[in-house]
Image 1 (cartoon, rainbow, N blue to C red):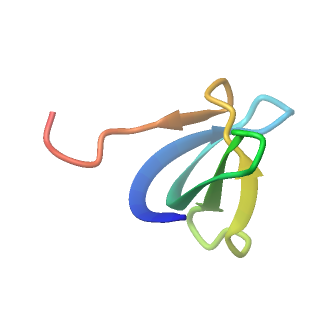
Image 2 (cartoon, one colour):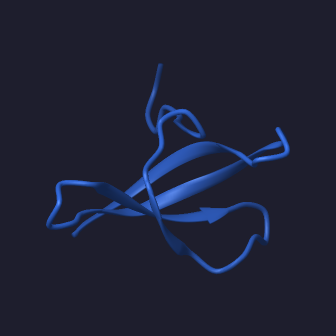
Length: 64
């Protein structure tokens, strides 16, 4: 497991988008990448999700 601070934009199945952050990455035994994701503001507790670049867009965390 690798701890990080990665801002993201998350798309829900109904098409809505919201901001969030990934605070850890983990690769399982099958090589699948998982992220510990929390949506903002005041979203649910962080949860582990399989990383899907189509619905979890990584945002810049430092200068452009």
